[in-house]
Image 1 (cartoon, chains in turn blue, brown):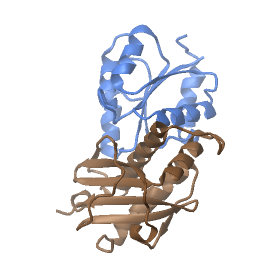
Image 2 (cartoon, helix red, strand yellow):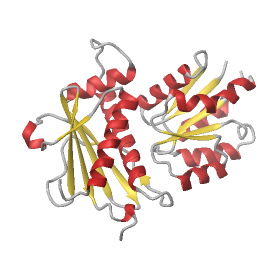
Image 3 (tube, chains in turn red, green):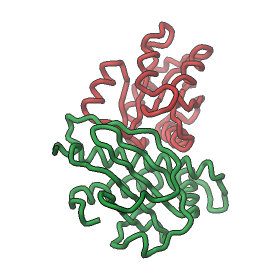
Image 4 (cartoon, rainbow over the protein chains, first blue to last red):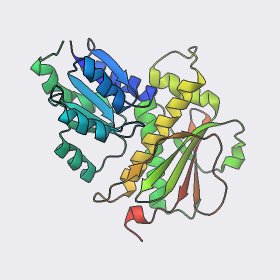
Length: 129
Length: 159
């Protein structure tokens, strides 16, 4: 069972992202939710995760800073981080990829845009649980 | 309204229509009318600022019933399910965030990065005056209003 952390300051967005993951093949996943990046780091201090999905624009700690912090954490730097944003352009995508983002996806997420990105992660079968 | 170029107006209309279809599975049709024609009364809404490369604010306003319908549609629940105002407002905040992102993506050159602020509650339209575009949309018989205030010249590579 995959453990997936969804970070977005909008509860509606978190629910929508979760539904997309379920439709795209993660129906049995365990979902954990956070409303900003700092909450994600708090979760990762005590639990492991297989995937982190984060919005870019959040209060407290935004998705860019969260990505940077995760990639600096010895126990978490290998977790694939998907960035979901409504404000993507080629320059920003390149920057996030350089920082180690696994994928950058536009908002609103859709199962069809998520599936090809998710497929290799599901195929790996490397659950942390 | 007519001060805005057709390109900008179409980008706004597309941004609203695409957002409503992709997240709420609802159609939004642009209307040739002003907000005054429909006397909106009580509205719920959300405002977001585009911080860079331009200073633009977008305000999305809808009647409370439509906010609830959109929220139900996104959550995929029946018509008799009632959400709290918190959830309806959260939905509107996410909608204006996505509309702003899509709109700016359409009008900003690929080599220009734009930044969005965080959506905030806003239940009234911006003050009338120069530089305000008002888009009125029909969403399942109700009205959705989108106000855009600011100068978009730099976003389009014009100084």
